[in-house]
Length: 215
Ligand code: DX5
Ligand code: ZN
Image (tube, rainbow, N blue to C red; front, side, top):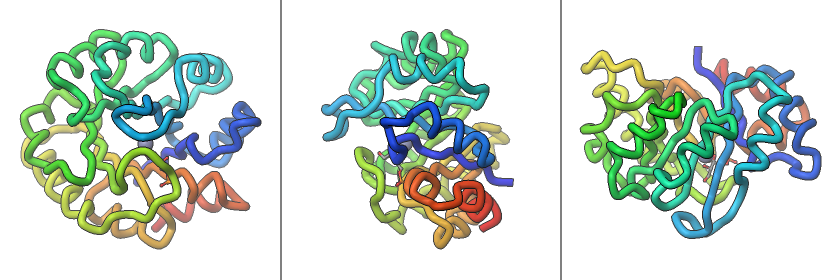
């Protein structure tokens, strides 16, 4: 069964703690936390105090998506703040292998992400070092965008490669996923669907999560 990771980017930040509790109660499997630096992407979002202040409020796994340049500088601090999975962008690292190793060393699960314009094959050399692969289905930086259809082919290519290698890294898709297109993303091979707007903007969040899961 596919897992659902609501993205905090779409929540009401003035009620952060309640918003997290609401999606946990609604059946979320992970909490997806988008970190942006205003450089790798043209936006700035959450940092360490937000993550650490939420850590003791919930047991849900924190799936932290770093959209920052040279994330190796901060992997230890994100792990200390409470990240369970730390995902970095292949395009943002001068040394991908060292960055993934630094995440593992801190005890977090190393994740590697690709933007829509980066090919699947570019990350093949690193698949065996990863616990999670994140395929961006929109350009990173903002919530509420429409899914880019050609990114589904990349999910299929990576799915096939993971299966052929018998690599048990989870395959996550992020951006523009809703109850209408979720079935396509699942059939392309995703194990985890990130959903910001589709969950946080829904009147009934439990129904929204189960609609995505059963798509
Ligand atoms: C975009 C972020 C996504 C975003 C998803 O850069 O990585 O996680 O919050 O939001 P929706 O589901 O609204 O596209
Ligand atoms: Zn994200």
